[in-house]
Image (cartoon, rainbow, N blue to C red; front, side, top):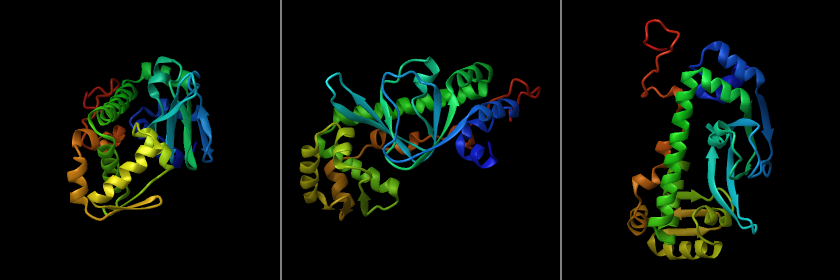
Length: 256
C-alpha cells in the first residue's frame, strides 16, 4: 500500500502505532468503482469496514413492499455504516455509488480486533459514530419540525454553502432522490421549488439561482442546530483542536 493511499485513506489511522497501521493497510483493498455500483444490500453482513477515500455513497432503505428512500449521503473522508461493522450486525441500508468513487476496504474481523487492541482507534471510532449519530438527529429534526417548503429552502441554502456558491445551488442528483432524502414526493419537491420562486429563487433544470438569499432565509428559517451539518464532518485525528490521547506505550503519558 503506497504512502499516497495511506495519507488519503483514513486520517484516523495516522496516530496508530506503525505496526498496527501497517497491519491494517497490508490487508486492505483499494477499490475504484463506477457510478451506479451497489456496494452491498441491506440485510447483508459486513465483510469490510469501507472507507470513502473520494466521491460519495448513497444509503437507501427499502420496505418489504419495495418502497425505497434515500436515507443519507456519505462523503469522503468518512466510514460507511461503522455501527454494523463494530457489532457484526446486518446492514440496515443498501449502499449505492452515485459518482466515480474510490474506497479502502479493511477486513471487518481485523478492524474489530484492532479496535480492541488500540485505544486510539477505538477513540476515533467513537468520534465517528458520534458524528454520524448527530447528523441523523439533525435529519430527524428537519423531517419532523419543518414543512416541505422549509426543508427544500434550507436544503438549497446549505447546498449553496457547501458548493461555495452563495448565489447558486446545483442539484447534485435527480430531483426524485433529493425529494426522497427530504421525506417528500417528487411532486411535492417541484411544488416547493415553485413556491420558493416567490422567496427569491429561479429554477432552470438542475441549477437554482438564489436571487435574494435573505428573503429565502426568511421564508425557510434556517437553524444551525439542524442545518450546520458541516460541523459534523469527519475530522478524525488530524484535527488540531482536539486534545491528544495518551498512548499507553508512552511512559511520559503525554501522547503523540
